[in-house]
Length: 355
Image (cartoon, rainbow, N blue to C red):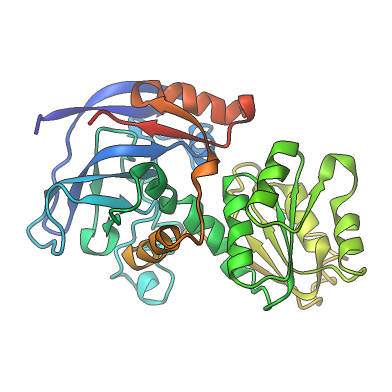
């Protein structure tokens, strides 16, 4: 193994560059993975714009798979050369928050989110994996790296949105925003037994994709009030569950308004702007409508990842249509720019690294 690698870093707010960095070394419980595939996320755009504060010389990226390059002495069940996936969230699974059942909040709020937040991410030729026994996952032979990489964030986050929505068997659910996370929440809602799945977006191609991934009805919010349309589709009562997948004030308000009394609003979106989020008071039942607002961060760990890869392996979900563009690692800056502008109908750009 050479001693240096190429990495794509945030040099400050709005500033990126390719730099050479030392290849990291594993501690006794850690691993080093040689990156083969990665995905660019809208979260990377939020980070670059300062949603979590300034970061200097921090390698970006949090969705990647690869092969084991080096293992710490206490890591078992893996060997060099194994194909592995690593979730975007890598908890320690030892701290109080982890033991309380909130590993995504490892150590502190959002503390499980380490890549491109508190440590270098994986837009690099190699990346470090903490607590590797819990955070490395074997990729089944039947699943390509191009597909397995979707388990690292999009499936885990989208399915979390559906899981947190408390959808009754045969119940009704509306998913606001049909980007990659929203589309995976749509799949998750169907898998969890929703009777009526409604996809909401303003882009016709995304609404077509929503139907592909299991929406029974789609609503284009540019053509009318989506809350009114949802009430029409549900006999005037609203949905049992609404899932927010954009991270916007308007979509959050619409979720509260569209949900019937006793329903659940599940938030999977990343609110990257502003100092507060307003709740529509009357539609919330002035605080007494028995409406639950549930938030969460992409669940990590190899048990979660093994289950997600199992869903892919056994044909329950095929995330491959999400890949609309492909780039070499040398062009990851172009992919990031397209994710910011949403040009050319981009959903997810797949980044390929040299073998």
